[in-house]
Image (tube, rainbow, N blue to C red; front, side, top):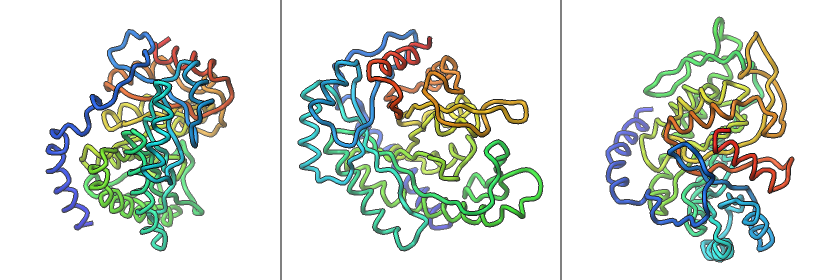
Length: 332
């Protein structure tokens, strides 16, 4: 970890210079779309997710009241991305993010190829006019792990090396702890190597957890996202993905200003050990989820989140989802 720490120190020293350059300023983008009326000082913009936008999709989403979209078609040339951007902006919409998705940074034989693919996504995102990519660094599994409600991770805040993952005897979790430490170290190495490209393209690397069995508590995930101490790296937080481990407001408070973007979908948690917000469950529509949306909205205001909220489910119509988001954003 010595090399990682020395690189981290260098990245921390350069962060102020990058910020002062104005590359992170939202002023380079214009959102003519009106925002939801809200009593909160922060603004949240509504979006949906699509692989490749079309005229029909743009027209429909614009009519429903969305301000933009996240695209998952990351493997395109800058020229192709610019062409799609022109189509989207014709409808006064914006592509705010690109979903690069899963990488395999903890798999040596796939490491270099995935580094190059993320560079491709960063360049495409810049051409799309997006200011972030969604990146899931890696996945581990196939060994004994604690249940979602039993995670109690003890880790070194300097190196992020995990010591234990639950109370009591951790011998049964030895393989999991080892795999998590390898994944964390390789993910740090990968993300740090990508920061220069992110800075060059003006696109942030937003790290997401998608039940990949890593960083499963608010404190640990926040520590990982903040470890880089750099403005080009942050968190893409999905409220539905995380509620089985802890209440959404706990995650939001820990992650704070490291949050770059938000995904939103519903998850219904069953009661375990007399509590909700850390237990088994199943996917369900947003408005039926085990999430206190009023408290979520207040917490987003408290941490001064300004940005995008993209819906990642398809149970309702576009118009219905737009109204649901309006209520959430207004704190109703």
